[in-house]
Length: 82
Image 1: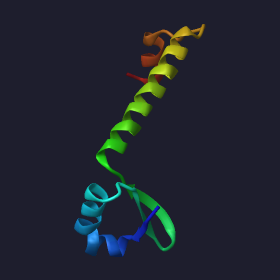
Image 2 (image 1 turned 90 degrees about the vertical axis):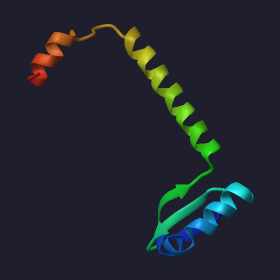
Image 3 (image 1 turned 180 degrees about the horizontal axis):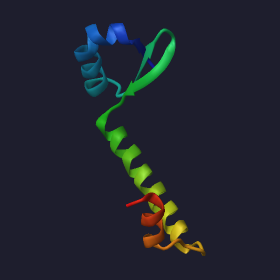
């Protein structure tokens, strides 16, 4: 996976994005002082990540709804001072 410093990204972002979109589509890891901070990914990859997150949250919500001993919404609001 290609890496790019934040300094280089400031200078070369348009070229890096073009290479990503029209080239091999491989994500680019952005780093600062040797520490990986973020990644530039193709939009298709981002959509897959979002879909995966949605599925995971949906599964967690379904599991939580099946659990016994739910706390009434009124009690939660009262405990939070709402």
